[in-house]
Image (cartoon, rainbow, N blue to C red):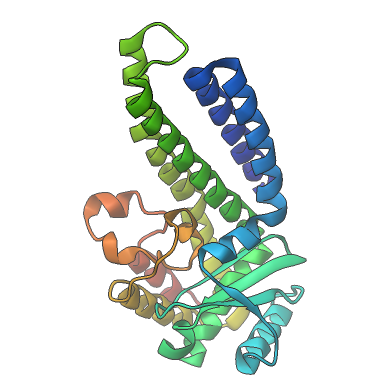
Length: 284
């Protein structure tokens, strides 16, 4: 099921870029976009974990760099019956974490430096188990590809914007008024499409990862407490990260700028209070 989602995302990206390229610049632009989409798809599968780590400015660490963290991850991945993932730390004061990678044998668990200082060991276990659950259910490839797709869609909107500025809405077709309307629609609608794609993928995955993490640790309350703390800190401590990669984190790292009803509706994460309620209602 997860691989079907990946295939659908990659196919959708290819079609969107080629159609937009044909509209903006004709067959030559369509061909250029096709080549770009192929390169993007290959890169998204093989190298997207490295791209995401760069988005978070994270560095891979070994057992000597953070022995307590390394030992915790090793113990919990054994409970989850998973290979040992690569571990990385992102230099942010905001407590947060995410998983990335293309499969269980090429997975990364990344935490911020802030999470190692601002939540308890019990809560951190829940967070690590949550990220391992994403790996176990193969969510991370879908989420990582979705982040790449969102970045490409944002680039597409930018192309349309500059085409509108310098081309005056003139595409390869003669209907200038129609071109103007379509290009304005691309500028407005394509970023919204990226949000909706990420929202649809991420929300159900978060609930599933929460439940699996609770079973791995036998402590749903620990994870529930961690989620509440992380969201509280996210509203107070900003994190500089590409919005395309925000949906990978356990709590939206941009939560401080997303407090109103509309932004919550379009959030890639389910409401934290609902996640907490489900966890506190679990019986392990």
